[in-house]
Image (cartoon, rainbow, N blue to C red; front, side, top):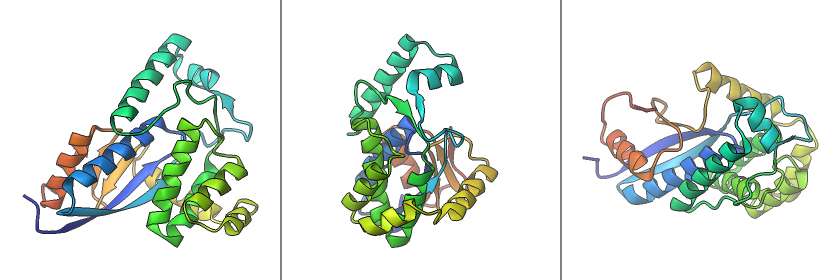
Length: 227
């Protein structure tokens, strides 16, 4: 049983090139709608790079996944369709063709760091726009024009976004945040940390997030981990 009103802090550790992060975020937001208004939350998006060594030009997606997992084109197509269906179930649209290339996402994380300083709501809007740009619209999330366009649509200043991307602003802060979470044992994403102590791992179904949010808001056991 929850209290009359519980407010949660949620750190969503993820990468904009992670399909399960798109699924997980949509599931979490759906769960938050179900538990409102008794349970409310403020989301903070924390950086994690799946491919920190990826060169600026990126890499063909099939080639990348084949090298990483040894998967065939058929296996990748099956996995892509399964993720597409999971996304559709929670309102996130994946392009049926999949993403053409895998890109470096560090600059996207720098912009997200800045967006959080402006307002958590604008950071959340930017995060969702970047996921849409990559997975729905098949755009390059390392392209400065794509990043500036998403920032502007999220209500952020375009000129300031360009200044940040043309410099190394927030690079040190972003690296520090990345290290903090990897040092804490986060090695796969999404990782959802609630009130700095409860960890939920993976793109879980809405019902799993809903149950966890209610338990945590109701002062359930001090640790809760969903593998």
